[in-house]
Amino acid sequence: MTITAFKMDPAYLQAKQAEYQQQVGADKALLPIFVAQTAKVLTRDKKQYLRYGPYWWAVKRILIEQGVGVGTYQEPIWANEYACEMPELTLIAAWEFSDDSSGTWGVQTREYDLTDDITLLLYDPDMEEQK
Image (cartoon, rainbow, N blue to C red; front, side, top):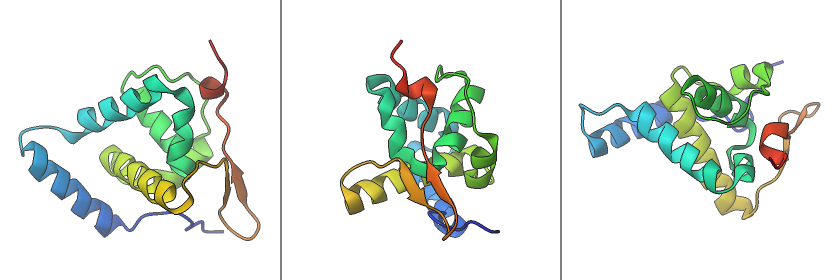
């Protein structure tokens, strides 16, 4: 079964990437900027991971790979399902999802209907448990 729910058009993501690259300059890498901004949001409130919805597991994998302390628990199946061809595009998709869902629903949810038969319940023990 193919899951298409909440997935962004690759051409749209590439256009956004080009737009951001133009804003920061051709000589600056986008990934460190995106990672730093995402980490900043999560440092203020760990439960903000919910804002990234089904993209969270792909986002978390990127953050872990980039050395951000977000725990070790992962869901590789969901990370693979919502990862884009480049980490930068995955983070753009996650932020676009966040902006769109906040504007649409005004709240963050844990539950996403991905198909008629599949509902994703988003829960990351690393981000929920107080330490």
